[in-house]
Image 1 (cartoon, rainbow, N blue to C red):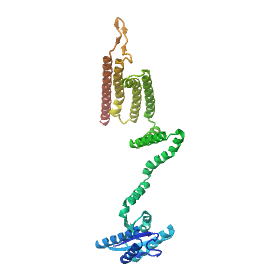
Image 2: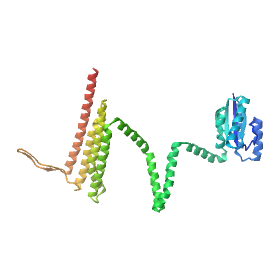
Image 3: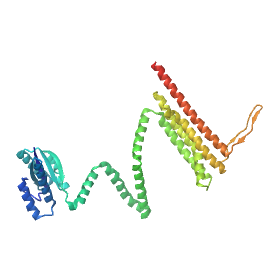
Image 4: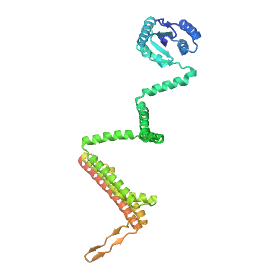
Length: 378
């Protein structure tokens, strides 16, 4: 097995306009000496010395090695064709099986595919001068970075957009601090957008909506209804906060929750009901989670509403719950106004009862399905 250890001189800075490869240990060693004396700072000297070292190591390992220097001069097409012609000459003359290409720059590395099209390239040895290692390594890192399309879109697109928007903001607002603040807010939002995976979530959401539209799922409509009810709940909570004026932060939050929870509970109930209907239409059985969800939404809404009502009633922000009187024939029940603690207990007990009813309903429905399946199998 014969391996070609070849270094490439793009531009013929070392070999000159010879038009032929420099082949053999003595020829390459002589070229290194002559060119090294003329220009000891050129990195091609290190490249040729590295090719000699690799050839020596291969011969020490018991393999046959042919060391050579390929070069070309002129325009890029002429250089590429010269390297191709010299490679064909070496393959025909020495019956080569593989090659190790030694390069010292990215420009010379562009000729590696020419050698690779004629020989199996086992390795590409990149020679980096120790004094310039940091610069050369940085170059290769940047080269790999620019080759990654996803990284380019993630980094260059927001940076380019910020650079384009900055002068516009500077003209509109006339203040550097405002423009820099807007750019900082933009980058902060972008980092949160990527860091929290919102882009992946939106992509998944889009595909789910498309699938729901094509399959005619009821849940899609109920989700829209739920979104509308949630917005109404947030708006109602904001109106309730504005009505009580300047109060403690806790009371403001409780008033917001007190007014918003009924609408948010209705939104959750609508979404859960739509998903439950879709499960029923599939006729593949309904999981307990979907059966429990509507009852769970109502139970949580009752408990949260009761806690918020307790704080607001104690602060005289809302009136306590009053049970109106009832007259049934000779039986008369007077109206009762609940104390804050009694009202809280009533809501908590109601939430627990609704939750238990949901668990019982889910267990009954699931048990009925199991019995039906067993009867069908028998």
